[in-house]
Length: 395
Image (cartoon, rainbow, N blue to C red; front, side, top):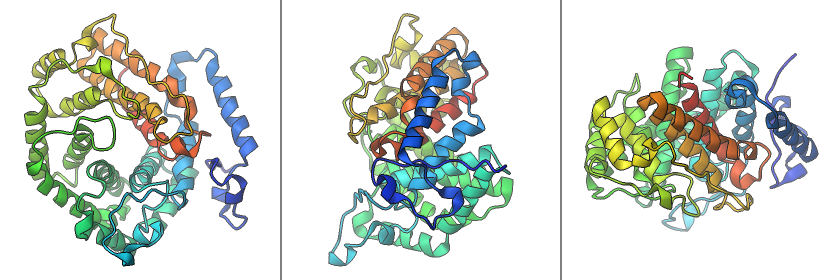
């Protein structure tokens, strides 16, 4: 019996989105069935769950999360372009401007939705889920489409387009495609590389000009971009020493002297990243010596070593508001940072940070699949990334 991942139907479009000619693998559920399924998931998780099974990366969980970008990667509207037009000739539809990354509401969400799909296929190869992802990627990643995406970035008006949040997710996607090439022989990495190389080159030009870090809890956060870019620079098959050195230099200059980060002031009303924890998540990667890192963290976030410290998860009152729902994202991003710190610290401090991360994930985990499109077009990526970071721990 085929076990194809279901695809959800969002409040935007509802039943009007159904396409009777669609591939059977990608048929959407009707709204009432989806809500019943979501309620069933909540009921199942509300009881006693042994060994934190509700946070496991099993096939069903990953398939549910993958169902979101499997659907929205080709949903063109609603769409937030975030671009600068040079003249009237550039008044084009999202799919004309960005023939690969036009879905899922905006460019960066489309990019990281593709990353989620790539990870899902890597986690469960030789499954229907992996076959579905391959079918999508074979259609998405063509030389012609990448060329058009690249042309958009090569315009003078696009020099800061998606800087640096979208850039970070693009190199994260490229990193995953490089791994896929080694493991499966796929060629998507080669096809996408011209676009990624251009963005990386732009990033290398930009970093020496950045005198101060951007310390916000949204897209422009410098530490988030540098963390993902550093992972990419160290990837087998990439190993970009120039980029790695630039990131290490900027990170050290920006963050090494920092002390007493005011995490008690967080979150801000629209945060989906924690400025304090995201910085620590970067420095986990930058400071190699264990004693040096521990001392830095004790000076930067001494609260994390206090057994009585409580970090309250973000609260979302209205999940149809595209800004307010960011706080579900901050719960997931805090969690992945806490898991990374727990892995580095170990011991009782590490255990407490894992518990803290788990509390954050559980606060928002039920509000991804089946939620309003304001959150569902992007939150699955944040949840998967957090659960993957947790899975790396020896619990």
